[in-house]
Image (cartoon, rainbow over all chains, first blue to last red; front, top):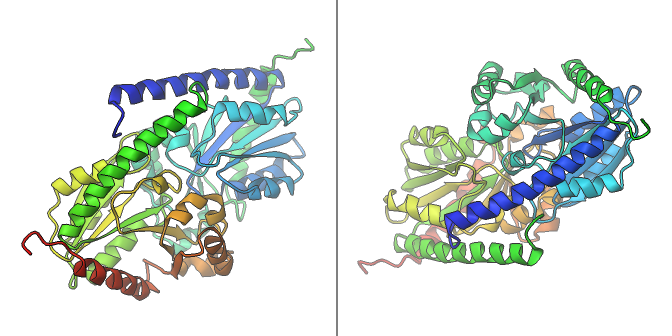
Length: 232
Length: 232
């Protein structure tokens, strides 16, 4: 980085991340009050996160109250799509910003009432690099990769796949039309993060989504059980 | 941005961009010595930039000397793919960095001899946000969007489409398998940037690529003609 010394850049980054981590802790404590399971969804632009979220909400809304925080540089298109499912949604526009930060989530939570024992999905700005470094207070980071993107993405963007607990390999319905080696992609993910779980899904057809719902339900029951209720 | 004042953040950003612009001017002067046309290719991860570059090089290498600078956080996979075409390629790994900067290009040029009147392709880090703000000394920024990504991307990531002179809408071979409105996507791009040119292509099948080559050849002849030759 030109112009500023490397030491000064590192100091600035450390300062930004340290303050962010403080706000993330506050968010996490707050989510614990209602026993909410918060998932931070991250991906490249166009991997199908919003379509995946809409299907997930439609399939789970009878079981869980669902709220969504949508991050984009501009437009409220995604929040509008989410609200059409009946879920509560807040759009955060980051302007020039390339990722969500914990303070933005804190402000969004001020305007987004959460029911007890529900799910909060945070759809991050489409970016396979920068969001990886920012804790938002979520329980898990989930990375969505589509089969149109190439199987070596985990090796090329390792920070994102190292930070995620779950990788959803989306758009499996397109596999017959592509040269894409699913096994090589999963191997690349595991090479970067031996603990990452992987599911192959199609948000378009619903293939494989039941396994994602089971993953969510198991973790939601843990969040519910560990809720700190102010009403004692 | 938490922790640092907004004023201080803006000062830091201005300092970084100002130094970058200085290095970009140096690169531009240097490219002019050899009459090289430099194109800065930007996109999300997985839009097919490298496949598009490989086909372009194979189709144009009889007419132009071609060199490539490849940007990725990690791996030299892309430079290896480029070298298989016979073109010279240098891989720049940005590590934690989410975009190429002009100084990195300067260093790459030190190691990458350029023939007179050739093409230099710079494949930026896959990221639809951050690379838009950094001049590398290129003649044109070219944004590649794939039809699997959704037609509203120009509205959601307007800085990138405002900065680009050409949008390549790639993977047109997949259109029969998708719900994607090409007209709506081109309209979104033009709304953000009335001067952007748009081409629909498939790097996989070659469809539409001849128009891209014609676009390149017209600009390469201008770069050749305006070359400042030290031997002149």
